Image: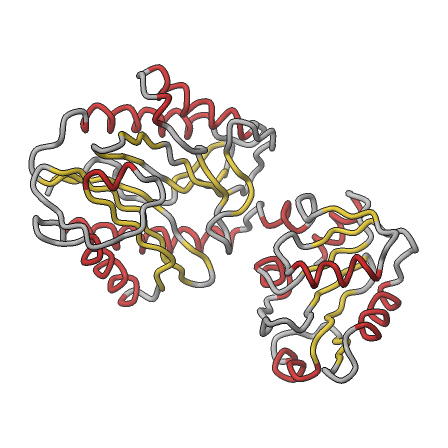
Length: 356
């Protein structure tokens, strides 16, 4: 809260309004029951409090010392919200940072009550601060990346002709459960399915001489992991080794480019140039990376158009891919954190293609 208020002063922000979201979880360590009843955390430079349905106040009180402004179903939230705004000491034309992830009806409740507000989203306040991971967040992300390494090894060990994508996904989920994590996603892609960047794992059966792409992430201690590796069963399909080598060079180039003070689009360019020079530019279908924190996708985003200047503590993926429709697709993904003027990779699992 202290860091947020310092940032609010620096950005001339009078009021930050958050709904039940990862923003609220990060700031107040509270994930209140979410339904159509408005729940808001409102922070000014001198006050903070919750608009909260009265039936949820006692439960939420166990998790925060901030004051509540309760309302009942028979009363509605308007008077409680007005009291919270009054306690916040805001002007008639406040600069308002509103949670871009909250329900639209919650946002409109706030905007209707503050018709003269100058509004923006949380990019330069809560979002900016969340992107700068502290040491405890680093430790959680690092520990979870190592769990993910083990899950990937378990998936590789289970690869053999006749298994389905769903079989391998079940192996991954079981590994997470046995190691204190829960599965966030398990994208297992056999053969031609690897050419779909966001393939939905299904009952495709693995045959001989086929490529495999596995993109998995689990959550522990409040933070997720995310990693992609590739494998081959039997003889690699034509072009597999060449494409893998190109992607390895692209990952290395992006890691080398990523450091505090560099624009995110320069990191994207470093990976994209390698792939384009190898003749596969048209087959790199997405951005180079996304931030990782409480959410699997959050700022900073590493895109060709992003002018965001990377900073110490930023955590993001570097995941170039080449997708050859009807044949196979490969992607190599690392999560890095900017520490000590360089990009530190959280995983310890080599990016070599596993041979089954």
